[in-house]
Length: 106
Image 1 (cartoon, helix red, strand yellow):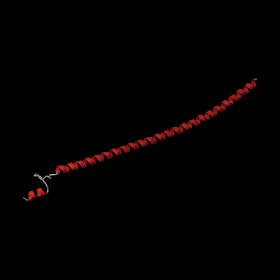
Image 2: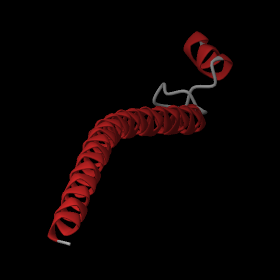
Image 3: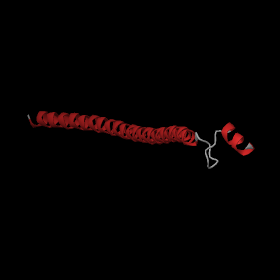
Image 4: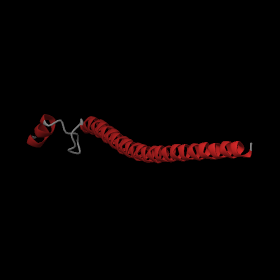
């Protein structure tokens, strides 16, 4: 009789299993599913952060490359200006020589 009273007090079924075990397991299952969803979301956010960092690194690398190209273009432009100035000087010299030759030929 004592055994039956303990069973009723603990709300155990005839096999000694708590009667609300299914409800407890269902609640636990929902908690585990909620935790799994949070873990999955964290993993997704970590992946996105990693991808964003990689993208940022690529952007910095490309910008550095573009700055180097711009510097090279600036150097090339300076060389072209110098060559243009030298060519203009030579052209003036050739023109002056041609004018002098024309004067002598007259």
